[in-house]
Length: 483
Image (cartoon, rainbow, N blue to C red; front, side, top):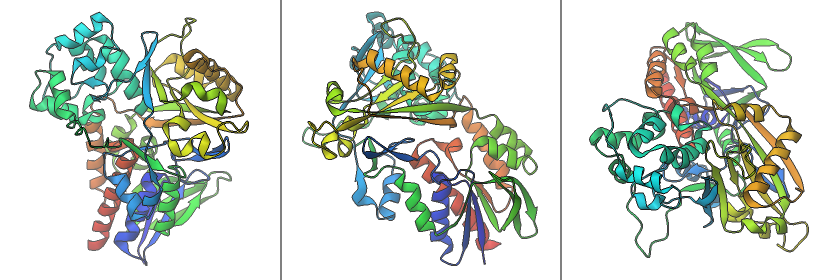
């Protein structure tokens, strides 16, 4: 009987397990080992304010096909929902302003869309669109490129908040080639104008009568339903609370040493093939004896930590948020009292997602009706963010509520609160990230029956993770077919 070990029970590992089942058939034995006591990784949910809400990733990018296609394959298409028409905003220059439309991760193709965000001097720098060095096929920090060509304000007020929302990092520490690949490709084709490159990346505007194409999607019961459904469809043997501590080659495949997370009891799993769907530091550790160059490259990928403060407010007190889906806070911004912001973003969940609106769970005038908000904390390499993440839960809730009051004027006492922490939850795609990924994949390619998947490599979003899981499963299945 064929046995495949999947190390990691997040969405990437479970996608690999599910695809392995469809490729290898009903008789294959698929074992998933996960260090946590629950499946799903960064896709998790909890009950708050009388409803189930996501406390990790809450949506997927709908313009990539992988997530919607997998949802249909799993029979969940009747659960697919999209955000409502509520608008997003930026907190920049001491003001809360609408998020400009039609940008490429904050880089506008038309300077006019940024007029409400930038100062006159900042808008003039954007319009100047200065030439700058660019090596086709090369890489540079997003912030450095934007500052050199379009000015500091575009980097700080437009690009940095959007990148920070995706990666919990700074534009000056993230590489263009991996984080905004379409823009890098457009510059490869014509490096003369960054504005023109952004225009080349933007889709054609919809016809006047056409409904807008949804940018994001999720599941009605929460995006955390996706990994659970993948696990059921994979029909895998699940071993939770276990950590793979080492890998060894055997004449027929691989042996994984496994430790019980709580009792530290060590055993092993023999398998014909292995998929590593774990963060980069774990890949570094497991590959150190088998592919040292790949292990070193994986070890160069840094991780960012973050936290979510969740508030369930009385619906009546959240009324000022009507029509607003959330606010991104620019790096370096200050509150009206001069103090730095603790939060980097606020998502008004009940406004963003119509299926979570208070009226769906209780009458809006019902005193028990609630509205749910998600307040995000944590930027990689930011000393103030690191200090905030060290606060205990009560202090972090207090600081986030102070920020919410300064941002929206809402200082109501929450009905319920929660803090969910994601230490090392997001890989940082620094300059040269794709070279590091290529080194990892080259090392793995030389090891028969081994594959890697996960957010560390080709994208942190759910569609990208699903794609890496499928690719890893295909590699393993091809190996087993000729072994």
